[in-house]
Length: 219
Image (cartoon, rainbow, N blue to C red):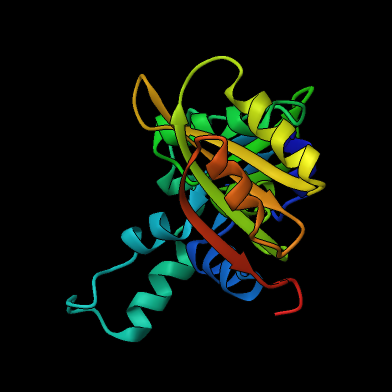
């Protein structure tokens, strides 16, 4: 899965001339928390709602509401962000896990997406979470079987062969390693028939959990 398939295309942007008050209004009116900052068609920064709130006067200030609003309406984004802000970006054809790793390593919640020097989108932690949910098929009806098994070659092939011979259909599969020797194999089947677990047990597999899910797409 690529960034291009999950990013928000043509994101709303601001310039250095945008005031803090205007930027906050844009965020609130569009239910977004980040705004790329552009200058002459080039990405020069990114500001978050948290950044702007921290720049706003404290509620404990002696300033009046009118004075606070005046300051926010007068102060421009260019006055509070560095002229050469180091903006971490990602390419639209990067893998989604690359974007997730960049966010994690740099402790940020979003990445502007740039192609040939042009801003084409933005990908956020929410986009990553949604992709993770889709990847695991959390909203789909069926059963989820968790197997604790030895982490060795051939295990996954054997498990899927057992399910195939039983006639069940695998919709999702994931492996999470417990340690160097053990792994959790998470399998989602489209059918709600849990009797396949008895077959897996007879083959010596340790069934940790069996969960039944209804279709959550309509909810």
